[in-house]
Length: 411
Image 1 (cartoon, rainbow, N blue to C red):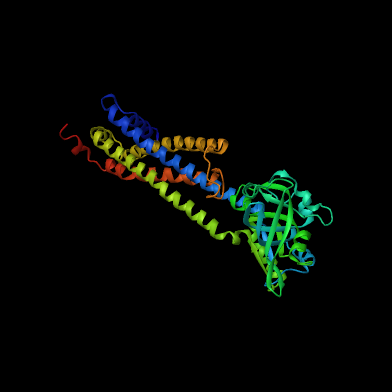
Image 2: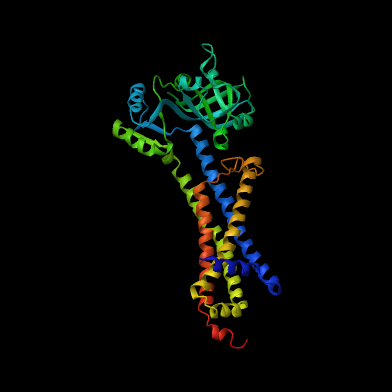
């Protein structure tokens, strides 16, 4: 595509005085269609990506990268087992944990929940990574006088629901109680609230309670047993491969699950929804492409005499075709550039000011997260330009095949 074709295309894009109204407005409408499509794609895909990344971060702030369990039983030799697991390449740390469902009660309130026992080293370091401690300290869970109620950390939503604060007492009731001649009697014990945390996910903040492993072992009568092992890996996206290596090393008596397996249905749904939204919003650009095509068709009809003169002066079919392809691509390029700028600006505003809030008890998160990835941006720009290019082909071909003799016969 040479200077001649580009010059004529730009001249046609600008229009002439007597045709300025039609040509200018049709071009602007075509550009606006591409702008809206690209902007919508960038914002929606950015929100979907941000939601996916934020959800992963918040899930991993509470859940382990990999868990190791024994079929049908709790772990007794968990210290030796943890040492074996730590020798697997890619494993960073291994911690024991206890996990059980309980009922939680405070004066005038009751709620269902989950209590997790963490080892003392994790508690001294400040608890699970990624949790924001709003009041108290996780390290306080390791303290306490002999015979005094054990200490717990609870989510901020649970604290609000049960009207609890630092220093208040929380009754924990386990259905896995003691077997008596009268049947199984639930265990109940008071715990003291020493920390309140915030994960950003309503499900965790309203149901999760942390305490130390020794305190939970005593409460449940487990002796020196734990539910399983939590494994922290160096690369979270290699968790599947490392999980298989741990499973192979420990043998068939044990089972391993990585964070992607445990949340597969959720992340699969998010991925499918992201693809669906990309396809649906690409239709906006496709509609804009019809605008580009119709603009070029009308241009060909208006410029019949000009095309005939250019051909009679020696312009080839390829040159005529290139003129209209360049014109259509300029419309697509201008629309894509403006749409990209507006889309990135809107994403920046959403990310910085967070002026859209979500109901915490309906969605997993409370604000609308945004994250624009380079690959997504390249795909959106590529799709917009490709659709714009395809829209130029047929009108350009129609212009190129025009017979100059027939075009100026009645002029």
